[in-house]
Image (cartoon, rainbow, N blue to C red; front, top):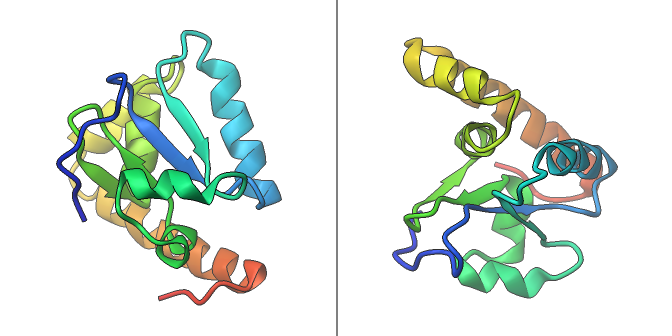
Length: 128
C-alpha cells in the first residue's frame, strides 16, 4: 500500500502499537537513540486517528508495523525496521547491510511474519 502524501515535516513516520509491551520497549530503545528527532514516532494505541495519514485501518495496522518514508511511500514489516535503522545512529550499518546483501531482506520479512502472527494471537488480533 502506498500513500502519495508526504509526512508533514519531512521526517519518516513510524506507526507502532504502544499497547504492546514488547513493541513499546523496542520503540523506546529506538527513541533514546533518536536524539536529533529524525523520526516521527506515532503510537496508534494512544491515538488511532493518526492512521488516517496513511489510509490504513486499525486492524490492518495491528497486524503489521507500518512506516512512511519522507517521500510518502508506506512500508510494512521488515522494511519498516530498515527505514527506522536508516535514520538511527548505531543502526545505519545494519540497514545498509540488509539492503546490500541479497536475500537478507526476504529472510527478515519471513521472520517478521512469524513474529507478527505470534504477536497477533497474543494481542487478540486476527493475523494473516
